[in-house]
Length: 444
Figure (cartoon, rainbow, N blue to C red):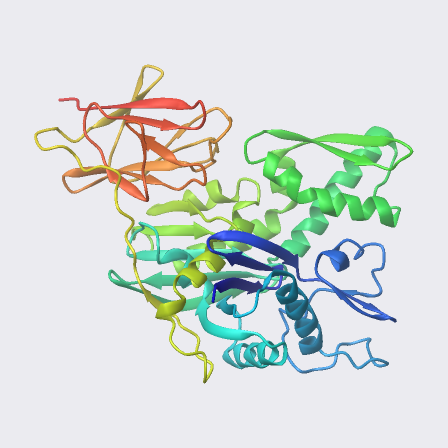
């Protein structure tokens, strides 16, 4: 029997088997007269058939009848059942069991309803865990962790803490700071830029509007490393494009970015050292991480898309029986082994050198990566395998540590580190491929 981790969030169901993502199914449904359509097929037609489309059934999970579905009497639970069962049929094998990673915004009665839906779909449930706890309990971080997830309809900040056991302390919600609102603003931004340049309005026709929304995540990903992006819409009769700068996207989303900054500020005690963990959805938003990390005392970590589901599956044995339904909100912290320990007799470094310039290492993290922003950082040129917030250096007592925050890996003296590693004078760090090399030295 295999445990399949499934993150349940309004934006998508994300499924992971044996550490590898096997499906990302958008949280969309079409109320077709012939029957329900969910997931990718529904998302691909949402702008073509807006009257039939809905995307709130996971956010508002309940047995209530959907507004506008009087004829069929569809409920939110019906749509959730259709979505989950369709996904399960496509990824499961006989004997498999699901482990659910659930956001802190999901209420206990909704978790219970999810269990009932799973039973009706014939899904064996091996456990249920808070997605922020699952995603953050397995990497090196400070004792206090703030996990920020930007869902489709809202943003959720989960405060976690504990030296040996990572527990969910509290959950705060920004109910209007969701991806859907920001995507609409960015679609309008792109459309206006295209009208000014080409007189073509991609929002005027359903097909080009659908294409615009489908390509937005790709453009946002490019803006992680580039100052501008060429947005292109291909109508079949011709291609239309406009060049937009990163700051245009951030200005268009300022009202929501301000809410997210306030959410983090309200959850962070001024000056207290804490790790800010961004979900993959939050990390995709241009320049948001750099803005939030500028708050004193915060170090930034970007989580992969599969992190909650993969961690939930890996911890299945620790979650206990699923009946009666129980949501696990605390897990033992797993400290990844360091690649190396500082050699006896070798001094801890005081500075890191790049291109002949020395940067002092202190108790406040020195961030290395391709992203810009405030705070202590060494900006690198964008390149293959270099993340916006790739790694950080900091002094902890008599030791100096490097912490890897990337999906691509940080290399110390030719060995890839796992989580964090102690540094010594004379060590060499490499990020990217072929990469940038930084040297550690002790001065004075």
